[in-house]
Amino acid sequence: MQPKAIQLKSDREIELMRSAGRLVNAVLGRMREMVAPGVTTGELDREAERIIVEGGGEGLFKNYPNHKPGGPPFPSVICASVNEEVVHGIPGRRKLVEGDIISIDCGVRLAGYCGDSAVTLGVGQASEDATRLMEVTRRTLELAISMLAPGRFWSEVAKAMQACVEDAGFSVVTEYVGHGIGMRMHEPPKVPNFWNRHWVGEDFELREGMTLAIEPMVNLGRADVKNARDEWTILTRDGRPSAHFEHTVAVRATGPDVLTDGH
Image 1 (cartoon, rainbow, N blue to C red):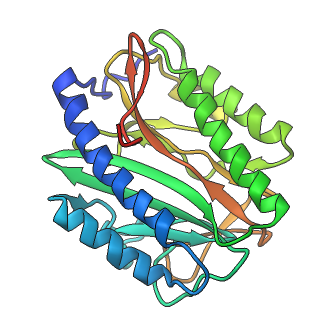
Image 2: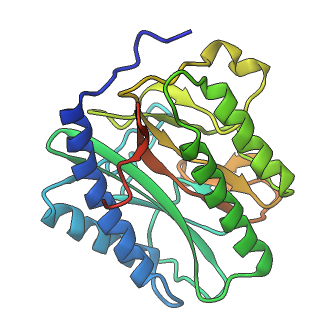
Image 3: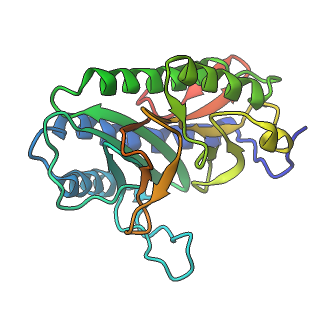
C-alpha cells in the first residue's frame, strides 16, 4: 500500500531541507541557552524570529491559518507549550518558573524547503516524573528514527513507539500526529505515533526519498486533551505535564538521515 500523493525527494531537495533544518537547529540551540526561571515565552519567540530572519528564512508557524473558519491565525514563529500544554502554545508574557518543562517547536522555510523540529526542556530542576517523561519521549523519537528503512511499513514503527511509551507508564497523544514535509510544512502522509484499527487504511511503506516529521507527544497522565480558550493551545485534560520531541528525517537506502540535527 502506497499513497500516490507522497512526494519522494531527490538528493538535491534533501540537501535543501537539511539547510532549513540547520536553521531550525540553531534556533532550538539558542532556546536551550535561554530557557531559565524568569524568562518569558515571548522573549524566546522574539529571539527565535531574529535568528530565522537573519538566517534568510521564514517562520512556518507565524500567521498559519486556524483550523476554525474565522479563527485567529497563529501569531508567533515558535510554539511554546509549558507543563500541561501539549502543543501549539502561544508565546507571550508568561514567565518560566523553576520546575516547569517547556516544549518548543520551530518550523522554517529556507530557499523553498522546510524543516521542523521540537524539543522539551526542563526549567531549572524539573521533577523526577517530568524528567523521566522527557527522557521516554526523546527515546521514543530515537527509536522511531532507528527503525526507518525502505520496505518497512509505518505501522511497525508506530506500534513500537506506542509500546515504548506505554511500557513506561505514560500515554501517547492520539489527537495529533506527525506528517510528511518538503516544500510545504504539511504534506502526505499522516505519521501517527500509535496504531489502532482506524489507521489500517492509512498505512504506508517507507521508501527512499521520503521526508517525514516524526513527533511523539506523550502525557504523564491520560492521553485525553482539550482546546484552550485561545483557539490554539492544546492542553492535557487531567492537567498533568506533556512532552514533545520532533525531527525531520529522510529515508535513505543506507538508513535514516536526520535533517534537523544541525549536521
